[in-house]
Length: 190
Length: 429
Image 1: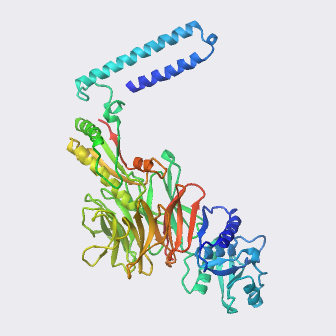
Image 2: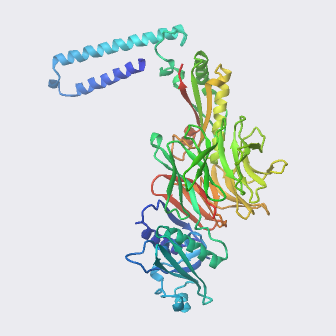
Image 3: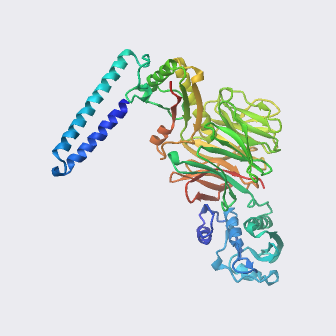
């Protein structure tokens, strides 16, 4: 909801900018006042939502049953990150991704009904069926990290797509690095 | 070694072919050999009404050129076609540089078309043989491939493989628009037929030894599973859907068993499924990745990829017992082995410095020869007569098929007009 509000505000501001760009005489005084009032109201609402989010955070995420915002939807949370990248021909999880995986594991342990698919991928450098196995190994590495942090095996599904589903299509180091990944896909949220 | 005249000639033939519907793959000879045998194929006379339904001579000429063993003379260089075998004048054909001549005619006969043709040895001044093939009019293209097989055999003494078909995976679109198809086409890429279509990946097509079925991996249920598909009836059934990966199906030469890589116990190992009973036998037991099994010609040995020693390499294992033995030591990695039909060589993908190429390992001498020079050459598949190898490669980042003669001297490319093609599998004869 918070994100929606923020988007609403952005859309409104773009609208205002567009309105401002028009010749003055096209905008009556009454219209301008109404627009300003609406902008002020939206701003106040956004501020209230932000306060609510901070309060919720202070109480501890997920512990509050009344919390209406699913932390998975919070763009500022570590839970918003769903991609783990790997080195060439390797399946070890790099340390930079550990905090993010710990956050997801915590979410899963706090929400026992949640289900997560770990989809492993490889770049195109290697034979296809070997890459399918390599993608599985990467997803299994991610599962191990999450198991250690409280996620249950029954909540995690390991899948591999090998090199069959690239997201970057040039034959460059950068593209290959983006394709060597495990995607975290929530099948069931809490 | 480049053979400009062949390129030009083939380009001319492609122009002729351009108007035909359904020719999805375009063939280009990128490198030929200077020692190719010059052969003339005169246009086959049509003795029916209207225009001929198919340019049989053009199909035959393109096939022969694609084998790399022949240089087909351009039509502008051909002396007037003899009306029949009795009008053959060897001097006339020697003068235009032909060592062999093929002439023919097409005659409607009831419901069928009779293809009649003759093969001449120009230098020896003799007719090697005359042949008649009756075909239904809609099968004329297949008839032309049969003609090619006979001409090939008459001149080289080896069996032709032009009547065999190729299966491959086609991919169009990106992101949510991405579509995968399993295609079956003539060996020259013409007449492609879509066997199966999916928004999820398809991979690893492999033929049954009788050519009636394809097995492949489909992600239609959002995970890898192995399916068997009857090419004629379209009937399909799921053969393997164990927990983990179900991949790399390879049919045994006797048609009764399927080797696969399954990770049902946590890591991928090689298993053999008895197709009658569905019973599984585990062949390898390692904590490494064991995948890409390939059968020896006699069905008694499996070749497979394993990274048990660190990098992926090819190993061989006798099914009667004993441990796996490492076969590849050159380059930084090796995988996707396939065995030549005569059982004398293993052709595989060799990785070196981040580049993948097709290599040939002679099983007797253990000598390795690199056959291709691309950057991402993968998924090799032998022609059933062993004369050529089809493989996946890329051209300006786009997936296309490449073919190379068994000695690595003749190279060609087969590119889709739209989208990408990969993982070719040549059918049995």
